[in-house]
Picture 1 (cartoon, rainbow, N blue to C red):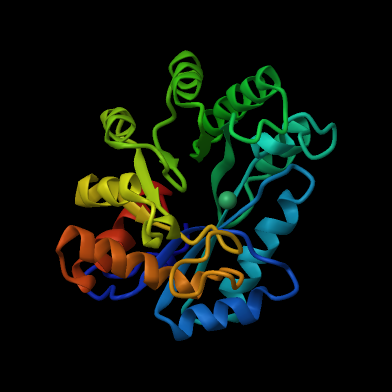
Picture 2 (tube, protein in one colour; picture 1 turned 120 degrees about the vertical axis):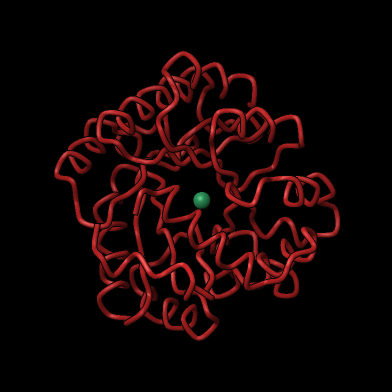
Length: 270
Ligand SMILES: [Zn+2]
């Protein structure tokens, strides 16, 4: 990985957004706004096979055109798209991964979503299992989306075998699920949900995760944190997530920034 990605941790006083979706047209402005808000790291995430190449290009363009901002990428097939012949095409996804593109550090988001269940459960399970295999084959960090499907998600992971590095993005489980994830050495990423009033469980988890395993994210353009709810989300808003997490953990912001910066690089082997 490029040496410019790894900053001296003692110097790091910036936020790292571990999960965002960027529009190719606005990505440079979005990254500039992030920089103005002390967000110097981001992982740009794909949700379908067809857009994989574009996601990697967007991340690289941000890194090149906005000095000081590091954008990494992760590509995969979201459970919503698992049944779509084109968007869910895992052979195409692997073709892109196999070229080992610059900046690509993750496989996903992939996983199970039984809340919306836009794809049949069995199709989701099959797609998830295959993506775990791809992550392991190419030594990429697995980025997991799971909603209302904890037991099946753990079963699929146990059966396929856990990759070395796993991130549970936009964590919406409770302490029991957090313990199961942490026992496997995985990372937990807290989203803007932690700033919402009715998010007691997520707040509890944000305070509970050990310092070396916590990440934060915007999942932009979704899940805009308070006080900007109603507007589209953007990586520049990840500070609202971080500040809330620091408050819940009763720690100072710069301490949390440093930990999150190091954790994110470690989680993505960057
Ligand atoms: Zn996402």
